[in-house]
Amino acid sequence: MLAGIAWVLLISLVAGGIAYIGDRVGHNVGRKRLTMFGLRPKYTSTVVAVATGMLIALSVTMVALIASQQVRTAFFRLGQINARINDLQAQALAMQHDIDTTRKGAFSLPIGYPIANIGLTTRPSQTDAVVMAQLSAFFDQTVRAANEQFARAPYDLKPYRHKSSEPEIQAALRQELKNVRATLPGDEPVLFLPLVAQNLFQGDVISFRLQPYPDTRVIAAGDVLASLDVQGGQNVNFLQLQQLIAAASIEARHRGMPSVFAANPQPANNPNDVLTELTRLRGKYRIVAKAGADLYPHSGGVLLTFSLVPR
Image (cartoon, rainbow, N blue to C red; front, side, top):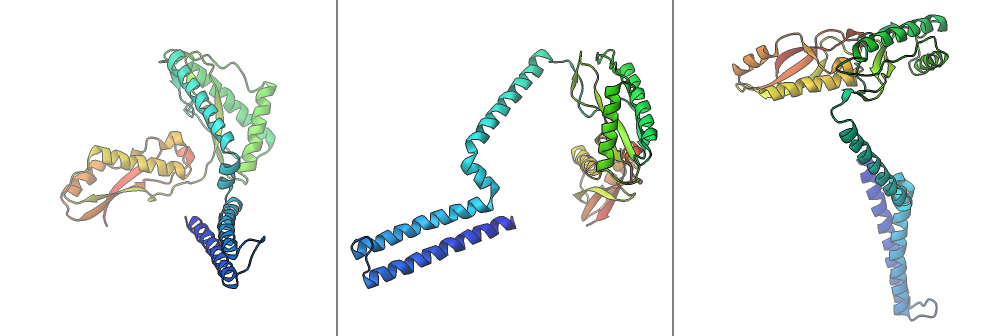
């Protein structure tokens, strides 16, 4: 915002400076009755005025082009961008049509859903042999659990047939370990969760990925995750309370809790007790949702405590 205002002021100053110089030149041309290209003095002053206006427009355009990548894109690549947008819209419509017609009512699992209710906590700083053995065993355990649960009605997915001992799987696990070591250096523990890799429909082969999370404390007990301003003596409806819980869920995800664990925060105390207390009070208050305990990715969920504080 401030940068945009600064550029507007700069462009205004440049335009004003050029206009002032043009005005002075035109004034001197008219006063001294100078000529240009053999024109009469009054036509010469007109030429100076027109040239000044053109110079202002050119200067403003050049400043904008130099200062902003978006302006350069709008000037020189707008046609390409519009064509790309049209292509993407056509692809999105085609994909939606495919989902609505050929797979309507056959949706099984969404992307990011836990394909197995298990997790692996390890330290990637250990030797390759140790971590690869852990990842391989965890991979096979995930495959067994996923096939047992989802390769049957009502999901009707096709079982996953690969094993960790296969060269391609070993190469993929080694690459995953390499990526984790590059992005999460140090000796901190890492939690791996097996999540659905893409939206799965009935008849699809089960697919998943091992998603890593730094397994350190992401939320301390008592941290405020969300709040709601309320008025004493009034009732808070169910929708407002749900919005407060949803805001706490979003904040937990922002702080590093896996989405699957942060999706449904659990209350440590009854929020209805807070709402009942609010009806007996007068004045301005705030319902605060705090973490009910130290929370790590391996905690498996978000615990909330609700309290009422004056504001």
